[in-house]
Length: 84
Image 1 (tube, rainbow, N blue to C red):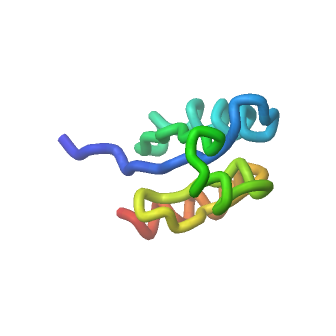
Image 2: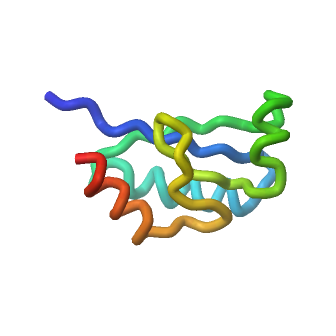
């Protein structure tokens, strides 16, 4: 059994864009074979400095950005194809 691909979603709990992207990714994760780890940037000064106003930021396990602000399905699908 293969492990699902790992993605990271950087955001803030009070950010409506962040929560919306998290819900969208949760709905897609099983059918497209990935797992998303939520990371609240307010818990880490370095992440706050790095991502600040860009959140939400969807990144791969190496922190390469896939998209930010809104879920870009084309970019996500392109990443999933490349990752396989």
